[in-house]
Image 1 (tube, each protein chain N blue to C red):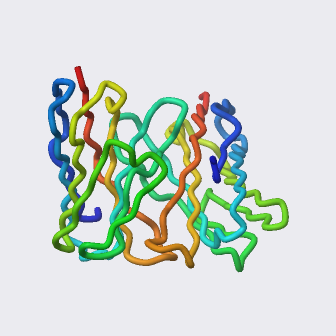
Image 2 (image 1 turned 135 degrees about the vertical axis):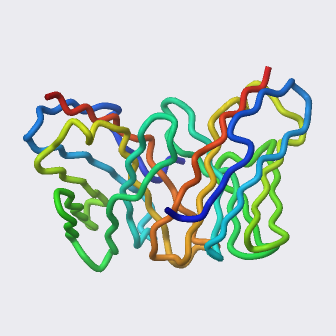
Image 3 (image 1 turned 45 degrees about the horizontal axis):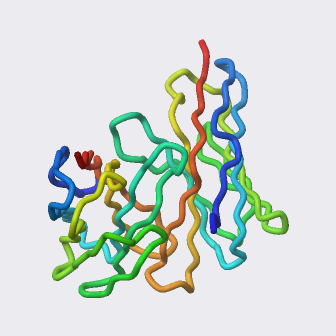
Length: 112
Length: 114
């Protein structure tokens, strides 16, 4: 199994509070991604990174920010959580442009 | 703008028969395509991929076909087994785009009946 770990695995938070999800890899892969999975929408890309300090927005980036200060960690932050951000969040890593991506186990986030 | 679409939310087949899952894309820059399988409460797992220079790739019971002119790919599972019941996602990426973003479809729930 690819060395990718998401933390926490489950979290319940209140509307308006900041939340940070962590993705940690031990594979030294260049590319890292954050997705959210919602019924009827599949996997939607939030943000991605193509190197340390190199990040870009995905299709549903509003309300989210990311940081990648070192190769192994990719952090997703919800500055002020809203109920619409209740979802399952997946991190993925990828070595190159024509390779498969490996996914973490997911983080189930509930905003109440 | 949904660049990768899976128009069938669900598919039900009998054990031993063929399962065919379909995927359409709109971005002509996509040059690498992948299929993933996902069980509940788990992360997606990679199944099979295909480069745009090919039109077919086979791995055991799984075969992916790519029709570039139609911007269409399909995943064939033969023979289907009950353990194949899962959500299947297709994904696509373009070498030229920064970061090689990986775009997924909405998924198709496959149910294989014993």
